[in-house]
Structures are given as structure tokens and as C-alpha cells.
Image (tube, rainbow, N blue to C red; front, side):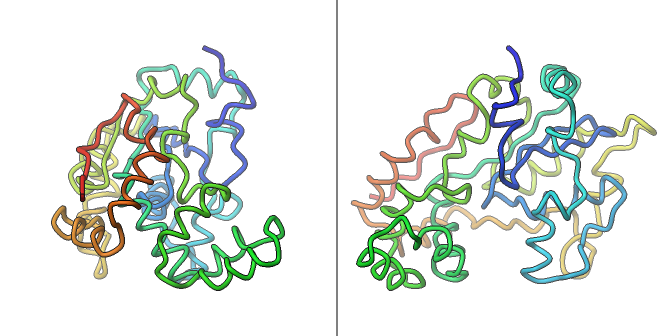
Length: 271
């Protein structure tokens, strides 16, 4: 298997490029709506930088995501030969965190369509639509019409609601050797960080940057306050927005996210 310049993991043009931390032999594939902002904070800390970019709030979150401003090393910063070698080397951890698709879509809907509605306006209510469709789109955004959101996203692709299975080219999925889940975020984050050892002094990432320094008062471990809903809360939240028709639509259109053999979700069946 050869790494090509056109491969998704190397040539993707957006912010979700895989992060590389040589000291810990880590390649991490972030997925939007699966804690990616927090992961980029800890990666900065692992590389000896302040996890917080001074401009806080929404702007700080944008800067931490943007490869031009977050100072994180990405896979495409390496030559094709070196990047391919790292991907194939079993001593390197290739990690990804995934999220149950219905939950992740609801999170994207609430965040990018209902609350921060300017994002969806700019991305999907644009010149590709006729005048009537554009007016309809602008009227819908900011409301809680999940049906419109789900249908519009079929012709308006974006990493926040795109397939998680497309984060890597199919040929590279078998090289992933750590999969974490949003529903067990605390334990999986801890497990990953404990498994990463510095090639300089043998200290784990958990000991150095994960065990403390996080949370409101800085006394918590990284991701140890679980950001994901607990199962019962999640189902309650999903039932507020999904009905039988919308659930069936998602199961059909995002089917690939359940079918990929490299991770497994217990299917949430609401109806």
C-alpha cells in the first residue's frame, strides 16, 4: 500500500488533518463533534505549548482548530515517504475517537444550525440554490427543523456532519490501532494517554499533561468530566428531535458509519 498525495489522510484541504507528535509516536485523526477542540489543546500541551490560545471564547476555539494558528504538526508536513513509514510502523499509535452517528448529527445540528446559525447560512444557504430555495434555507436556519437540516446536508457536504468513515481512506483504516468512543470518553482518553510514552524520558502523556490541569479550576484530569451525554440523557435528547422518519433517513444515509468493521457502535434504536 502506497501513500499518495491525493489520499484523504495526506491531501485533505480542511482543518481536520491528522496531528503528529513525534515524541510520543502518535498520529491522531480528529473528527468534528467528537471532542476535537479539546484534543488539540492537549496536543499543544504535549508539544510544550500553552493549551489555550490567548483569544478565548469562540475566536480561541477557531484558532485552536486552524492548522495555520495552532502550531500543531500534521501528517502532510512530512514527505510522502516518511508519512507512509509512520503510518505503517506498528510502534506508532494511530488513534481516532468516534461517536454514535445519531448523537453526532444531533450535536452538529444544534451547534451549527440552531445556535451558531451563521455557519450553516454561509456553508449551505448560498449561490448554489435558486432564489426561492435560498429564501427557504435562510428562513429555516436557526429554527429546530431537523428535517430540513438532514435533507439539506445531502447536497451540502461538511466535515461536521459528513461520514466519520471517510476520515481515512479505506486502505488506511486497518492501520488504526487505537479506537476511542465518545460514550466512554473519560476512560478511553485516559487509556490512550497512559499508553503513550515519551521517547525522551519514558514518562507517559497521562503523567505529564493528562492527570491534572484541566476542568474549570484546573484540578481535573483531561476529559475526566465526561462531555458526552450519559446513555439515558442521550436517548432523551435524541427523542426530542428525532421521529421514526428522521431516524430511518439517518440510518440509510449514514449507513456506512455503522458498517465499517474497524469500530463498533451498539445501535441506538429509538423507534
